[in-house]
Image (tube, rainbow, N blue to C red; front, side):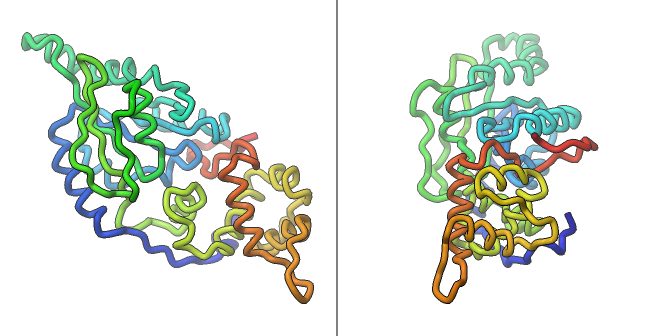
Length: 298
């Protein structure tokens, strides 16, 4: 789909307290053996903080694709292959239910097996490994840590990026996790990143124009999951229609009528986003990996 099909939006998001949080993370990286980044499996590209590659340097990296229960499994498998081909260790989890979480500690030990051998050679057998856990706001980081720890160990902040001080969490005798505030980055590299974060609630959708966000989401659904629109809203999306026209068609089917025979596309946009958050559109991945695959998620 051509970029011009999407409506442009002005997206600005970087509260001042995130600068402080980012500096703290940069400082604390020297204390850890590895970096674990938690991503939203539905938007692995947009939920990756581009600054982390620079900050982490050559430290071993583990990527966790969280919320796999909400994502298209075929697309998640492709993302996993792509990240592994780039040298990352990858784990798929659903922190809410605990699925895949038990594999975290073994994955960390595999990732740091050279470090463990190094400690052993120095006579430091049993030395504790330290891993920093990073992730954007609302990606399920605290839930994940609590599941791994088997107790309520991580404190979720009320606001993204609010610094709570260092939170070291002991998982077992040989592994400590360093929890960090959820941070975003100063400038989104594209409008699409901001939209994906808003659609999945990583940032509040209220900072954007809801109708435009809903219209652009409609275009993405038509491109990748037209059957979701047909099944949920009972219409076949016109390939020539713009996003607002698709919203209007859905509003007609729902009977969202306002005065003078016009349809309430703002209400439809809110309904679309709400039903997506509630999982009523099915397991949908909103980003495709650049792996050369022709097929899209079923």
